[in-house]
Image (cartoon, rainbow, N blue to C red; front, side, top):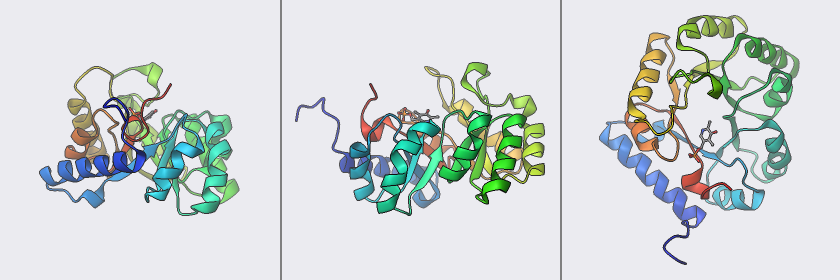
Length: 225
Ligand SMILES: *Cc1c(COP(=O)(O)O)cnc(C)c1O
């Protein structure tokens, strides 16, 4: 193996877990208060299997259709997997999302709240929901404008969505910490406990700033083509 080769999956998982534990300890938090979501988008079942074998149980996907193709078979062997939808969701996929996913991180508009509320009633499944915030004022990325967050939260509560927290993706190539701190403040101000923030390049910072859910792809699976 050359020094450029990525770590084998189980070793990569152990390395990420150790970094989470270190960052949590620095911030006087328990490592167990952070859920590591292995973001397996674009990766085939063969790449996911070693992480399942190593005990990883929370996985993230960004497309409903791709997840429908991969996860039902894997779940037959690992029924205790928790599937997280981390990508943007179209309202016409709300039924599919509610039946497949345990947690939805990308609730960002009232039309989607309405569609998810209907799907939850219809299927009797209630995935935990994060409201996604457009924390860097980049509308193309998805996420609700900060100013609209109170109205979105009120709408989600009126539709009986199980909202547990806020999610955001900070602008690329900037220091993420101020955006993580801002998301944590917005969650506090709105009485929400969970924070989905931090990816491969910045999850330790996110843990120090209170992330309860980190979404890590590349650091576990290697780069995506
Ligand atoms: C792809 C993706 C991730 C994981 O990104 P990495 O940089 O590979 O860790 C996290 N969150 C979202 C919303 C993503 O789309």
